[in-house]
Amino acid sequence: MIDNKKVLFSGMQATGNLTLGNYLGALKNWVKLSDEYECFYSVVDMHSITVRQDPADFRQKAKNLLALYIAAGLDPQKNCIYYQSHVSGHAELAWILNCFTYMGELNRMTQFKDKSAKHADNINAGLFTYPVLMAADILLYQTDVVPVGIDQLQHLELTRDIAQRFNSIYGDVFTIPEPFIGKTGAKIMSLQDPLKKMSKSDENPNASIYLTDDRDTIIRKFKRAVTDSEAVIKHREEQPGVSNLIEIYSACTGKTFEEVEKEFDGKGYGDFKLAVGETVADILSPLQARHSDILKDKAYLDGIVKENAEKAQYFSNKTLRKVQKKVGFNEKIR
Ligand code: TRP
Image (tube, rainbow, N blue to C red; front, side):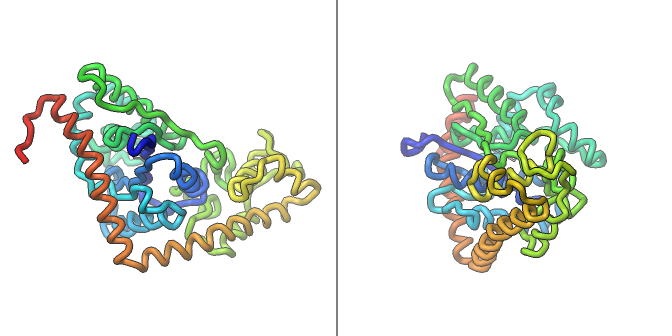
């Protein structure tokens, strides 16, 4: 608890082009949660170097992501928006937690298996202990809730296990975090293969709407979206493509699936796709404008980065000191 509010932590990586899925599935929900919780939203740049990055490109992408958090509506005075690498406690706690995590547990992580298959020439130790750094991110702030995608649930489960293990040895040190899975927009699917999640690493550019796509591109991609030959606009399992479009439209407008079905009752797919495309474009254009304004204002952005890193450092230090003491490190003379 901070100021009587529960603590929320989440993070995103700055690799690849961000998609509409990242926005509707994560960022938009983060904004909704920011009144109720004391929020820490990190650009988890330390996680990203488990895969090789081009330094200049990576630096810019991380900055773009941090600015996007703000452009999406997260007030950086109320929410702690910072680069993970600016707060030393993440690495320090991760080391300690490494000593409370078993090889067998890490070996079971499906993301590790997937990523090792994908980067067979660089299966480094960081890739293996990636979930421990994630546990450190979360536990450092005594986090109560963690909004995550379904693909990260296994990591969160491990975080809870590590925290409980530590607590059972040393007493109540860590808050045990709960996952928070958003109801709408939880899973935006590919426009080309609606059985696959919309992904920033998809090879087919028509499969994803990138947050940087212009209006014409967005509308064109929606026009090409894969549907079916049922010729009815219904949210149901047999129609994954149409259902995905309904979900996107619903997440953008706040209308329920039933309301969307009613609105387009008797209309053709062409009209429906155009309406979804226009709605998405209407949301993304102002977001893009805000984003570029923020990036242009270097003094403003630098100020936010500095203040929030200090704030994160302050809160994370409290937990870190406690943990260091519990494991038996001698106290630093200050
Ligand atoms: N591993 C997460 C992902 O790839 C990102 C992440 C890192 C994260 N640390 C976190 C998410 C802590 C939530 C909480 O999506």
